[in-house]
Length: 279
Ligand code: C2E
Ligand code: MG
Ligand code: MG
Ligand code: MG
Image (cartoon, rainbow, N blue to C red; front, side, top):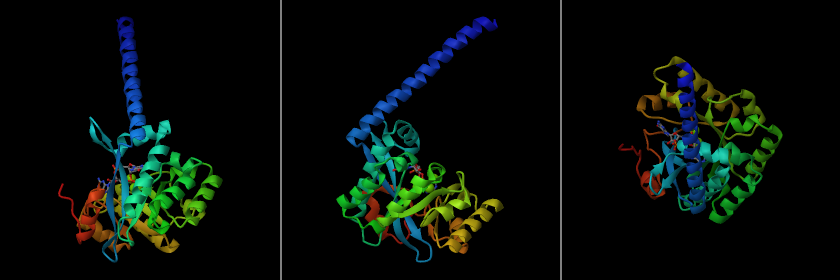
């Protein structure tokens, strides 16, 4: 019985693998074509200064405008884009679009762009940032680049050189999703960061878990001592905002103020004292 089933199971397993591999190949072809046709839209989520209670920047978050499947979230295609290297071309498009759109906003509003570790390692990175700034005319001081801790794990000499080259352009560097990766405090000493972004998993448990509160307090304190700004992401309610304000967190971002919205709504978001998403 086991043997008979074993054979059947084996064949089923093989077919299953095949279907998955094929789905992945199809998605990859789709993604490759999408990068060629530039089927992406950049959405923007406001980042607010806590002390002044105003919007100071927007984070650029990519969406795939799939002709049949509609809007696809980056969590569903960035990993494949990274595996296939397509994220380099995609990331350059996002950077160019975000800089061009930000150049139309008021001068005191910045833009934060996420960089994949794969994109960060590509030899073209610094040149692509220079290009995006030149093409858009955006002042480099208005651009922030968000990198994750995984960038810092590999090849620290080259990483440090790249970070210094970017900062020499006048661009600022943020450490995204802080506390979720292979966080090491020595990164904060070895690499020149302007900002630490506290991951939303800590923010969301602020009022319910003592340990999350302790972590947020430690990170904001660390930022203060090192002269590095701190941004809390994923702020969804007033209780979280109040706790973050009390801890001296520099900036906040989250659905409490707005979900990421298309570029056409940025002006709208700037006009409202405190934009709240309706859904
Ligand atoms: P991230 O850089 O940490 O961006 C923050 C994510 O949290 C965004 O998800 C945002 O919509 C979401 N978020 C913000 N406020 C709240 C909140 O109050 N509650 C909840 N539940 N979520 C909130 P999104 O847009 O789906 O992006 C997911 C991730 O995809 C980003 O995380 C980033 O790692 C990546 N990503 C997005 N755009 C790009 C891009 O252009 N290039 C690269 N390499 N990665 C990108
Ligand atoms: Mg980010
Ligand atoms: Mg983040
Ligand atoms: Mg995140």
